[in-house]
Image (cartoon, rainbow, N blue to C red; front, side):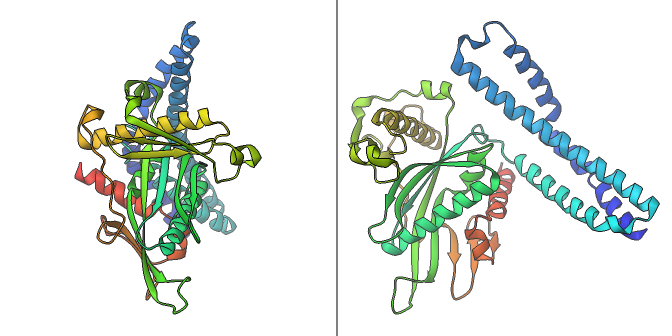
Length: 371
């Protein structure tokens, strides 16, 4: 029957793309690497270095997941082909809606996996720390910062990632002045590095009694979580770091709000500032701050192509007009447009609910084309 033939032909058309996807994901090479790592985990002295062993196991888990996901996608296509052939032979029209739905799910899964082939950076697979800062626009900007905070949390939750709030500074009247959160999940940094920059909002202000249109800005900063070996290689002269302690302002009960558990570190040579108030003890917050500081210095060193941290100078982005990477327009029409790729969405509400994959894919595709 024609309906079944169309579905079968569409599934068969994925044979070559699936083969290319397998090559792009290096499935065969990854399978060999998995065998080597599994052999190492069975060695008697494997747990002598617990930190290194744990890191290797995490890597093994990521590699296995990648291979399993590809094999599952390939099996999904084969099962659909068999089901289509069987339903066609029996002229089972009742199975058509299920086949169409299953085909749509397969195509969506294929696109998600194809997106992973664009994540080729050294730290793309790592967790990420995302920080938002309100810019020009006063209360408007702080409210905009809180909207972006919600947007990224919704995106992370949709991906199955976990979010841990590290630092939170409320706005003077409304919204958020600044916030940092750790986002944990496969390829979190690889996806989120497309969001680094200034985000601009245009809307009718809910804080303006005259109902005038306002423009607000907020910046997004994303740094990867470094592995233990890389962290150990980064040496910081603590005499160059000012450490301030203060009382946490977020949730956490009586202890966290009545003692100076929150920590802020300022690296004087670069002007980089990090802060954390997520933990109950000052020592834990200091350790978290130091990890974030090392990650920021590492990212700055790579961007500046310098090896010595002492030679680095701070590079603070200007959170104002002319520096934005993306515009979110709520009036007189609705549009979200990325200035770097030209990709746009007219459904602003969907974007603010975390529908960012189109922007991320366009950015990663552009990066690949440039390379």
